[in-house]
Amino acid sequence: MAVKIRLQRHGKKDRAFFHLVVADSRAPRDGAFIEKLGVYNPNTNPATIDINFDSTLGWLQKGAEPTNTCRAILSYKGVLMKKHLLEGVKKGAHTTEQVEKKFATWLQEKENKVSIKKDNLATSKKSMAAKRLEGETAAKEAKAAKIAAKNTPPAAATEEAAPAAEA
Image (cartoon, rainbow, N blue to C red; front, side):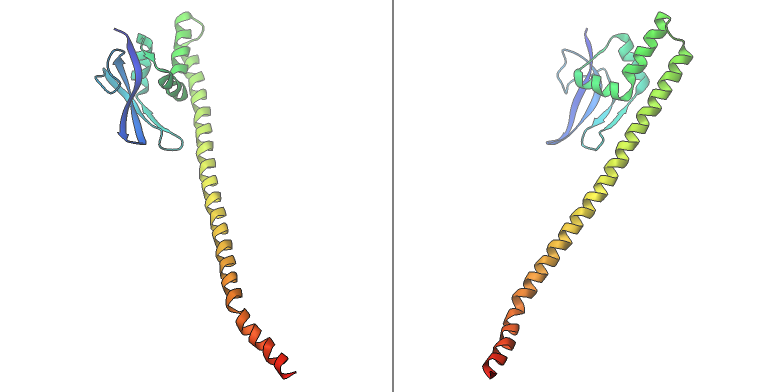
């Protein structure tokens, strides 16, 4: 039985979110599965990924093959990195302490990158809102000036016409 780690689609039209599951490769996309490993929601920015790290790592070590999208998700979360490091322990290239230390530093760097991205998104969102507000106020002032200009010429024309009539 070939076992795959893949996505199972849920949600509304155009608002899909996915469950990360382990399933027999012959089962339908949204059909029977062996175990649910987590949830992937691409509707948020950055995408929300909640997975059971240990269970996913266990399935990968047992030989489950992730699909291309799942491979990208697992790589992003560090599951494939941990699997790679643990295979190095089996071959004698590393010790478990070295693996844990390397993985902890990698995970810390990854969290820093994600937090920087979230901060940049928040600041860009605020700056876009401020820029939009400036544009709206400028348009509002231009429209008010146009209305004022439209309403004032008749009064100015009568004042200019009166001195011309006296002369």
